[in-house]
Image (cartoon, rainbow over all chains, first blue to last red; front, side, top):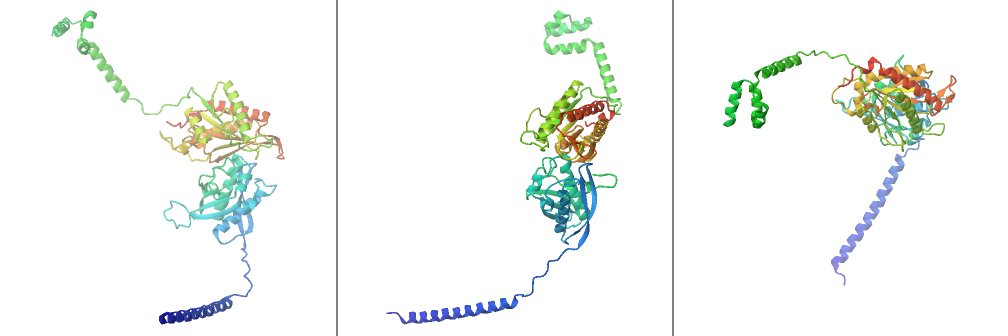
Amino acid sequence: MIPRYQKILFAILLVASLAMGILLWRLREGAHKRLLAGQSTAPTAAPVVAPAEQATLIAANDLDNSLVPQVHSLPLPADPEARARAVLGKLLDLYAVPESTHPVPGGAASVSQVFLMPVSGAKNRQDPSHQMAIVNLTGSFAAGHPSGLETESLTVLSICATLRANLPTVTQVRFLVDGQPRPSLAGHADLTRTYLTDDTVPTEGNKQ
Amino acid sequence: MRWSKRFRAAVLKGHGFDRAEKRRVPHPFRRKEWDTTNPHRTFAIVVLTTVLSLSLFAQNPTPQTPTPSPRFVVVLDAAHGGDDTGAHLASGGFEKAADLALSVRLRSLLTARGIQVVTTREADASIDADRRAGIANHANAALCLSLHATESGSGVHLFASSLAPAAPTRFMAWKTAQAASITRTLALAGAVNSALTQAGLNVTLGRIPLPGIESMTCPALAIEVAPQRDPEHNITAEPDNPDYQASVATALAAAVLEWRTDPQRMESRQP
């Protein structure tokens, strides 16, 4: 024999369950209608193409151990990090062609990322006039780079000088390979130190 | 007591003790006897001490003209070795072998000219940069030549450290010890450049960060032998070519001999 109060409780719980089920169903329908109403049926916006700008590339020459400025027109993004990567990509594209004066395989894909950060130890860490660029190169680029004091140094110095020429706020450069510190590029050029870009900019009559 | 009487008697006699008496005197009194019995000697010592002290104070403080040290040690550092093969040369060999061959060849030439040579390696051994610098510094070398070979570029590449010159100090930071010698290093680079050019070799000069060399306290250069090329940039000799290496080694030996007598060698030496 079921007591009366249990029958009443069961009836109340049943009614409450049904009411909650109906409420959930109506809420679901309402959310679905709002989603359909907010969905844009317009075509996706066309990608923004950066306008072509003049970029100065400091290209290396193995035959006379020199760094020579070259001006090229290429699309440059507004974001400084993307801009730095685009400029370095173009520089390494120049080195990848067979008739290059500084032949290095790899091309633009050899630069994975370029990060810009305030110079450590600066009085004002928000000072945008002194930035350090962290250039992350691919392991395949380092593995395929010709080995030698001159050729490796020219690669490193031309990257530093090119960054300085196009991003004057970059005063220091450090290198990573596949996101990790590496003792040298291909056995000679030291990648553990911080390079000062002021020391790498070629001046007239004083190459390299 | 007996000794005091004898001592006083000897003083009164004015001629000190004879040898037989001296042997009998106990040790603590011998010095006293020497001081008191010979006033002329004591006076002479006092005068001499005074003169010596005055002469020390009166020394001229201006530095003396440096004179070439009779000890002239050259350190030859064949780069790489062991697991570190260095560059792969077009001839199929490794840079480490070409470096060692050039080091052996140059060592023979210098030794034949009476120059003491210390090498960082004589075999295919792996030596880190700090150890190489330690060998050069321990040898108190007059100069160090770090020998490299490469497949890129042409002729001979001379590299000095890019450190800014610094005044020599008694204690120098390990990683920038070369800064005190950088002026003499550049003078050495001039001598080597001149000798290589006279030998008909194409030379390029540069200043770059050189981790091992920057810990050396002596004038030090990195010398990288690249392929020899004709005016059309075609390779005429690989860096491990024996004849090419012989011409480079002969020119380097001539440069070292010239540097040995160069007055700039002794300028601004570290203390």
